Amino acid sequence: MTADDETGDEIRGTARGTAPVPLSVLDLVTVGAGRTASDALRTSVALARLTESRGYHRYWVAEHHSMPGVASSSPAVILAHLAAHTDRIRLGSGGVMLPNHAPLVIAEQFGTLEAMAPGRIDLGLGRAPGTDGATAAALRRTDHLNEGADDFPEQLAELTRFLDDDFPDGHPYRRIHAVPGPVQGTSPGGVQSPHRPPIWLLGSSGFSARLAGMLGLPFAFAHHFSARNTIPALDLYRESFRPSAVLDRPYALIGVAALAADEEKEARRQVLAAALSMVRLRTGRPGLVPTPEEAEAYPFSPMEREFVDSWNANVVHGTPDEVRAGLDELQKRTGADELMLTANAHSGEARLRSYELIADAYGFPAG
Image 1 (tube, rainbow, N blue to C red):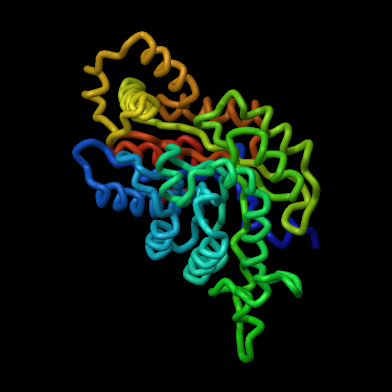
Image 2 (image 1 turned 60 degrees about the vertical axis):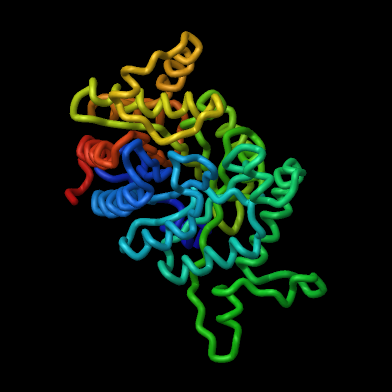
């Protein structure tokens, strides 16, 4: 039996309908102008239930901080809520920014999630802060931010040891256990789930691509905001890959900004609003996601218009047939094993409709 036989259901998904590869969901829990965080979280529950019923493979929540329009600062809390409202779809972090946290805390959080939803939890890890430098300093209680990124391999190794409860004799953490976790299965009378959340490495450059390959881990690349680096990073991952107990061959997904609407004009309106939100974020003015009407009336400067055009060039958007064609072309060009779609729009209704239309376009099972 190969490693993939044992873990295939936890890592490798199954393509549905006519999709070339499994399709999944990345949720930023976006908050639109005139909406509340409660509204956004209700949308996340509705979206998780919808995409589960339609055959999407996994549903990940990102970690971001100090951004009014993104309510996903606490992935573990949101995932626990989603676990209570779903039954089958895989749930995970896309990702937890490991340098922001003590590895033991993450092992405890995701051990708890695994106990809540056995066999359905993914642990995606990144080395970026998921925010600006000042917020990262507040999170980490230090101004030496580069140390966290530089120490990422060591933090990853420590987290893995806590998840597996296998620190060697003589290690200062040998008698420390992440609970829930394997120690419960080795205690007198203990019975422990055979599942352990699989670790994914996330990245937008070559560092995590190479590390994931060397460790034989699955890799997720942020194509949705680093498109020019996608193919070089995937090539580096595949070239660096060494078979492991987790995978015997590479497995890479890419995050893709994608939004479908019943009419092409409506899709353009929605992605313009999301692009305006990015303009404000990149210029130090983060806020709620504006309405399409506000975006259409906004006086973009030439530099801002150039940014919007460049940003939206990497957003697969339009009618369902146009989005399907764009996703098919992207998968063929990159060779990605899975596409993880993120639909950023002002309204929850537009996001829900997008995932439904894409499912229809690929002939996914009816919900």
